[in-house]
Length: 419
Image (cartoon, rainbow, N blue to C red):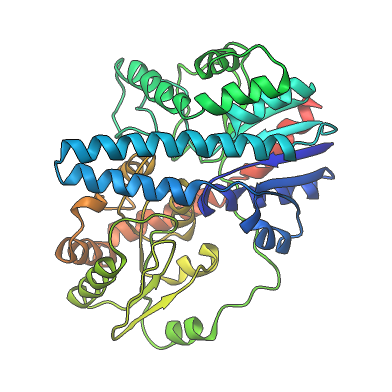
């Protein structure tokens, strides 16, 4: 079967799909990964065929979101309103550029599109136009349910109010595609349907969605419609020729396991302040540390601390005593797989939701919102994470449980059964 896996976003929104695509190749399919051009080299290293998307609006979106958060913290209504307007315009233009790129990259001869959550509103329209089957492969749940709150909202337990709140959250998401949706329908000669109408059509047709997370981490809601499944995690494929830097291996060998601190693609405040805060927290907790620079450009120079660029989570995290991260879907999964305690510091969108799941599962004592992060609070959290044997036990048990699942295999079997 000829399959295009189409995913967009930050590193955490792309890396898991290298593992899914690689599994499908192993099953005998002809697979092409469609994603941003900057990920082409790393994906090709995994032996995948990559069709690059030139459009990559997400750094601009994250900067606009950071400005919005800063304006909100200052309690300046006028500045907040201007920042909100800027963010909405940036989001709409970003989705329009993505629509152009996905339309150009879509293979009309494909048999199946596998679409990430951000690519789905665009990709499903293109798939229907070409008469190609499509399926959602999402890292987060966004279909309304009574069982829990929408993934972009703060975690709430079971309650009827979760459904209208989720519908409102989805309506807000759909507005980001407003311009892209209008232009895409016009270019394809289709009668325009709103983002809300398209979402309703996908739900009523029982459009299949496989979620790339464990049903143990997020149990299946009893009130979900048919066609929604939890596959289990699909893990990023590891490039076979990768070797760790000598700086890191020497540092790991020189003392007890360090703490890993990294915020991936997030920009949670001033990099210099964050670097100083991290160094102070590690000194207070008397811990060694590895700091990942990430998109924020963190840099820490201190005793018993090194700063590194991106390293494979599957290699590094199991060698640490605990992980401080932003609780994005991909990083949350990697930390659970590593079997080490977490200190989640959520920044935006689905991150507070995943952070709450980590606390509920007992692998994190508490979540610290990025806006409330201080060196003292981080030091206290690190001390708890590294000294509480019960948290360590739960983290190790989580890794053992996830090791028994085969998320990519579940998707591969579903494709085989639908062929």
